Image 1: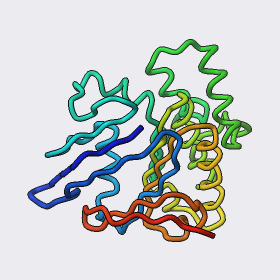
Image 2: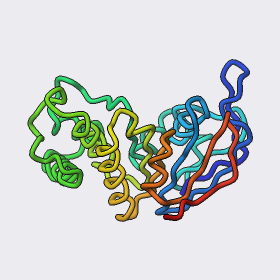
Image 3: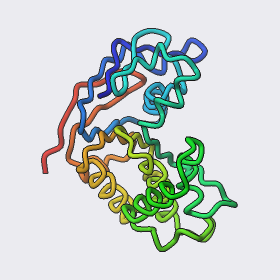
Image 4: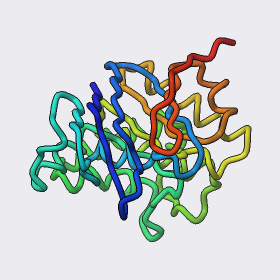
Length: 222
C-alpha cells in the first residue's frame, strides 16, 4: 500500500530524510514516532506529492508518486485522507460545508454529498453539529470534523500529522479510538506523533525517525 525505497530529502543541504526504506501493508495501523524535526512531516508530505524526494522512489496505492505529473496529484489525494494538528477548517463555513468541500471540488452530486457527509459526521460523533461554525466547537470536536473531512471520500489511506498535539489526554484517547475504528474498516492508517503516550494506546507497529534516519522497529505489547 505504501512503499519508500531509499528515499532521501534535503532542505538547504540539510537532510530531512536519509536513505529511508519503508513498507506498509494494506490495512496496517502504523505509528510514525520521533521528536520534532525528525522528518515525520516530510515523509507524510512525500506520500501526498506535496514534496518530491531528491533520491529514491515513493509508491502509494500502486502509484509511483515520484513520477506523477502535477495534474495527476489531485487524483492521488482522492484516495489519501489527511488530518493535521492545526485543523485547517474554513471559519465561515459550517461543519457540513467543511466536510463537503473535497466532494464539491470533485463535482459529486448534491444527493451523494448529503449522504456521504452525513455518514462521515455520524462516524466521528458530530452529526448534531453539522450546521455550526468551527468557532463554536470545542478543540476535540474540531479535530473530529477534520477526521470526517479526511474520510468523507472513502480513502484507502489515512495520514495524520500530530493529530493529538493540541488535545488533552482524554481527548487524545478519544481521537486514537476513532483512528482504530477507521482502521478496522480496512483503511490503512499512519499517525505521526512525538507523544509516547499514544504508542501505548495504539499497541501497533511503530516506526521511529531520528534526524531523518529510520530506527529499528518495535511493537508495543500491553
